[in-house]
Image (cartoon, rainbow, N blue to C red; front, side, top):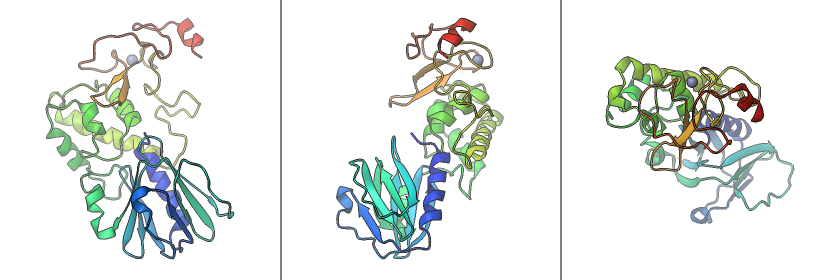
Length: 287
Ligand SMILES: [Zn+2]
């Protein structure tokens, strides 16, 4: 699932290409929008709200999209070629540029004044101009019985974190994703929110996201995507487990992070041993 930084960048690309110009093509391949006609309308701006994209038009309408799991907006020069892929959900073009939305998870058209019906439930936007850390902390603190990993992922508390940032933030804060918020001190909770904000801010201008500071492929993350590999800090094998009842998973180091963890189970994805410091040979075998 795209993280807030990716959505922020998508909004910026769309805004740079489309704002201030009239749409010459607006092909919305979405059942509920079959009769919507945006041709001739002009883009005022495209902004991100958490992981939602709001494309505001001078007619007072907003085209709303969400990338969900695999969605993407690609922007390029308008070379007049037809866009034929079955994955395409939207094509928006001006005389100069074309934006193609593929595999979008949501596409709606609403009156701009009604945008709140789409994004009004969101907590403070981590990368938004009105980021409000105190409110995000207060939203979390109001859920003492909820595990912190699930609460950070819940866009109603704060908007913009996906599974990568949740895993990496909690590793850096040395907290298990299953720690109940009521068991986290106020200072630590505020520190966790601040850390998430810092990480997202640091990556909002780069396509090569890095948490560790390394830009080398495979070395950008501490735990995310590293199940079966040794922890960069302590050598314990990184594990992955479902975060909640959904299909979302979280990666973690049960030595570096404090709190409750799921029962040990074999970590099969990379053919590793279930637990214990990985040997140098393990590391090499898995490249
Ligand atoms: Zn560790």
